[in-house]
Length: 156
Image (tube, rainbow, N blue to C red; front, top):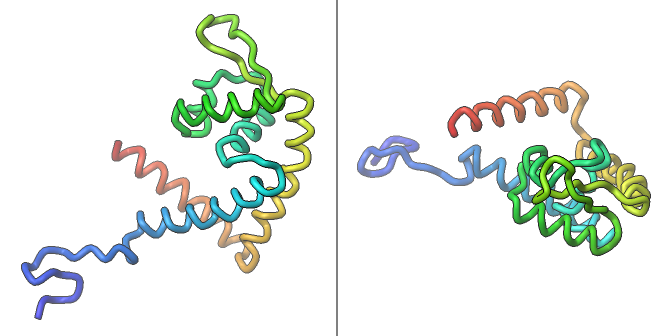
């Protein structure tokens, strides 16, 4: 009989349910899915569209490339989100004075209003999600996630 955690040939046995990267992915999908359903049903927004609105609310006047860097979404996802939001009149696109091929994105007045409606709900969802966690646990989780992200970036 092989030892615990080993296959018959002695190789380490990967148990997916105990594999931390898998657990993180599943947890992330569950959290994102719950929040996405809320944004979609209440505001007709997909997660990338909400992220684009949120980042523009923090720093108005960004290029799509800058949004890619800030959100770590791929270029195509940012482009589709920007087009969808511009089509709804929530984002305005203007030529970038430094690069003719690039566009500066800003929230329109309607986009700012929508952000003002969503942000408090997003914070309430976060608070509901974290019910049962103490302040120290939340701080530790944030710190652990930052360290994991750093470690993953170092592997690239």
